[in-house]
Length: 362
Image (cartoon, rainbow, N blue to C red; front, top):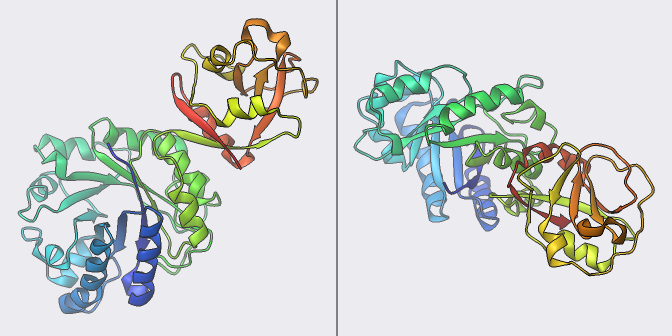
């Protein structure tokens, strides 16, 4: 399934001109999904149409897919029936996210709406909600999943729970989404805004690293910045993220040779399938660079987690093999070449047997 990155805007708390400029900026950096909250809408149907339709049309002109976040209270406020989603079609939305669920049968019927609106479900509950909906023969291609975000410090999902919830949806082949947080965004749905991530571990993590982490889980297809407005620097960094394989930022040590630099950043790496605890091994480099001299250097200290090493001339058949250290150890046959940036060490456990990965110099 193709992966995308997205932003969020909150028309009930924002200036339309600023929203349009933000959409244009995000589009230039490869963003193509827009989350719009309707949970705070007041003033009835005409007000909602005036507030949302123009921004949505502009988003479509820029290539965005637009999902509106709704709940039963909004249906009452706008006089919308669950039997007729015509208003959301009139607004130009591509889908609606049900912040609150129903009995399963109703959600199933909603996936057959005549407007072709996607129905996105709240993923942040480890219950058989999805199974119930599917048992009513829902229209699977029109059924998405999207996690909540959590404005209050300390209330985001723990990773293990997130993983269980996400597997319920991913195992059924459904499209999935989750949120990361901008460090500078101050706009969200509620007055409390300590950032808007799905995972608590991401609350103070940069948006691009958090996005890397979510993509690396293999459980999330779309990563959305929950709060507005992210800076252009954040948008550019997240837009540069490889959505399909983990790309680790490294700092080279001063003594790294041109050969070693080529081995690290010039090659497509694959973790060896018969894994070990001590290091993550990329063994094709020792084949490609067999016979190329690699004198020992930076090889007398204790290697730490995240150190990138290359076998030196004393390593025999393993000379020029690349490894990423997973457990501290000493081995004079390995040259310390580079170090994974500390904030990206969280990605290492998600590089599994046979996973492809790359490096980029920070």
